[in-house]
Length: 188
Image 1 (cartoon, rainbow, N blue to C red):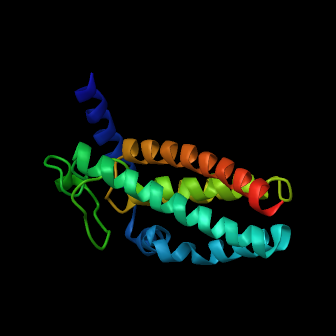
Image 2: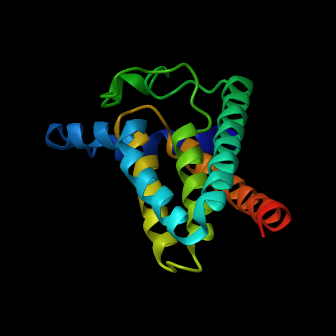
Image 3: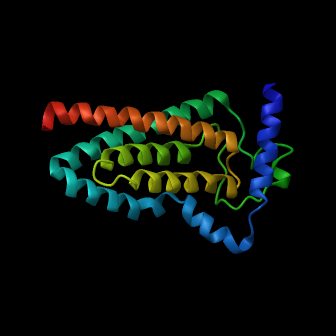
C-alpha cells in the first residue's frame, strides 16, 4: 500500500511539475525564494504593532522565532530520518522532472517551505483575526502558493507539501496558544 501511495505521489508530482512553462519559471523562482516573503512579514509586523503595541510585537517576534526554529528542526529531523530523495534526485523521476530550482538538496520529506509558511499563516492569521477577520484566508492562499512553488521548481512531491503544511498548521496553532498564554501572563 505504501508503494502504491508513493507511486501516486510521483505521478501527481510529474503531472503538476510538467504543467509549468518557461514563461512562468522566473515568477515561480521568485515565489519560492524565502526572501520574497519579507514584504509580507513587514506588513504583518506593522499590523501587529498597530493592534498590540510594542510589547505585543516583541513577544510575537520571540514566539515566531521559536516557532520557525521548531518547524525547521522537526522538518530536518524528518528529512534525515525518512531519507526520501527529492524528485530532482530520484531515479525514474528526475529524468522527467522540469527542474528549475537553483539547487537540489538530498532529502525532501517533508517540505520546510510548506511547514514554515503555513505555521506563519496560521499564527499571524489567528493573532490578527479579531482585527482583520479575513486576513487568515489571504495568508492561507499565500502559504499554499509558496508550497506549490516547491512542486513547480522540482524539489518536492505533493505528499511532502501536504505533510509539511499539516505540520505547519499544528505548529502555528500551538505557538499561537503559547503566545496567548505568555501575553496573558507577562503583558496583560
